Length: 187
Image (cartoon, rainbow, N blue to C red):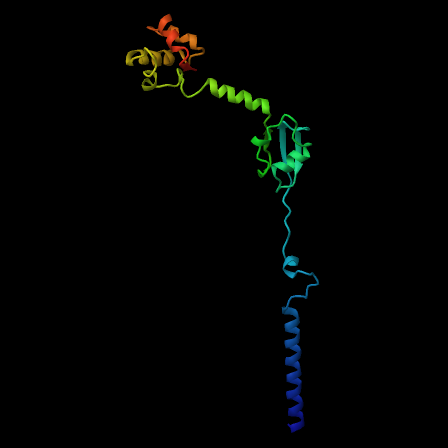
């Protein structure tokens, strides 16, 4: 083979290798993105579904509402027309995160007063005749170990006391003993 043909063959092989490498580079590199943020262009944005909650109590328009998934209680109250004049705002955590199927009850000021009064009536200085054990019952005036056992046996046999007056049905508790006990016990 003459030298000219050998040189031509080498040049053709080099051109063929160059063309193959260019084609390989074009097909293996990703296309140039025209998106301003290429990382964001490749991510699939998942939108969270809305949540549905029920808001009642001291709001102007209580009801079932729909909100974005990342909502807070303040958003729900706003959508319900805001807190009513009777709302106990200090007892409401408006920054609370919400989730689907919640029921939110906004407390009213008068409900808190009622709850506070009931706590005073059932204060810790009274002993529950339905729940106390014999050690607690013995702390009551005129109740010793035997009488405490009778109270426990009575409630086991007949069920929980329905009224404090029913304590008089326990054998050994007469009018005088009941009068001394009635202000120191609760159901």
